Length: 234
Image 1 (tube, one colour):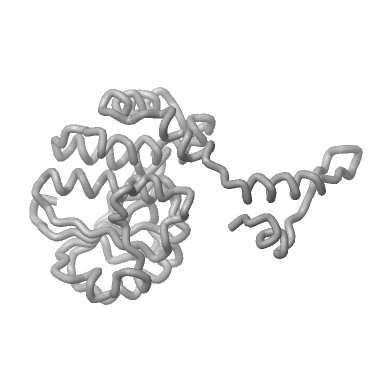
Image 2 (cartoon, one colour):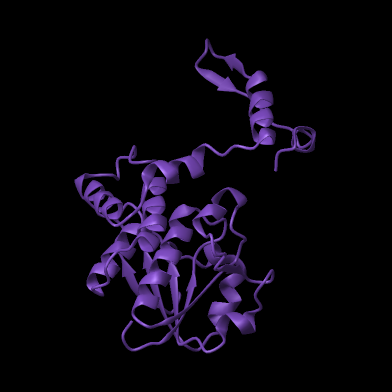
């Protein structure tokens, strides 16, 4: 970190809160150290997760950012929450064509040779945790702007702390993020209590088709392509 100035942050396709939150948290951490940071992903941020990026900092290759713009002046590419080429999608060629240094911050077991220095902990419950630990290592104080996306990352990748990956250390990190300004109730509301009318209608249609077999041991339903325009769901 200390030996580079201009950073490009990248995460996986079909980005979730851990990917997006880790990128945004890391970006602000780096900027607090005086670094220049750009975030570019292979896929557009899903509309239901757009709240995590109120300033719309996260760009998408081929949509509102060209490969040339993504790499302009960059001397380090940091890949977060993945170690696999297939998961990087449209950003693969950008990264492969870059001659600058590369590093990976990830918690997944599988990995490809990305030509990058690895910072991995496969026992970590979320990439967001590793970003918090990076802030500690870099002696950066957690702020509300850092804590909010990282709390969303940690909470969602642990199923809101329901998964077996969540332990006492997870809760300590969550407590620190809350102390730094993250508001769990607001984040939960944005994630799970903002359904559109179209989504509610679609869910109702799917539930209305529910059927059982094998004496109730198998419950199944289905969704049709035409259900989406008919209910107004995306």
